[in-house]
Image (cartoon, rainbow, N blue to C red; front, side, top):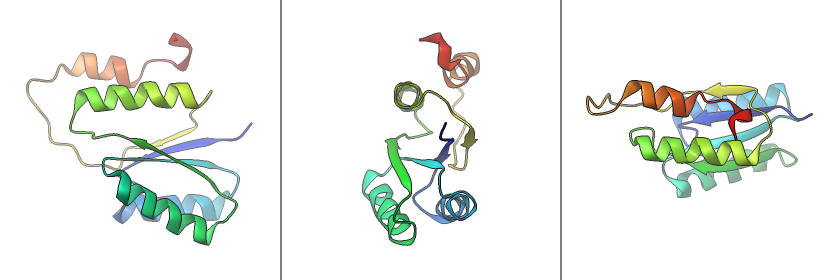
Length: 115
């Protein structure tokens, strides 16, 4: 079964370089770019595909500074993939004192089998 890697903040900097490195190491890996700006994510996807034309690359919109966006992205990832092998939390986040950390953790780390 194909392994899946989700990388937040994948549209630039370390996240983009990480995607490239992962594909260099394992061209059969499915890479999911989890980004806030979908135009930048598409540009990154296009650049990666120019280097790795047979790569399996998808995108999901997520703003890690917005709890609703994170939970929506987690739900979307659960729907798309039957497994998640690697999760690289590269995107920055500023702590919001109004966020319930326990609710955030329950949503983010809930099992794929919970559905």
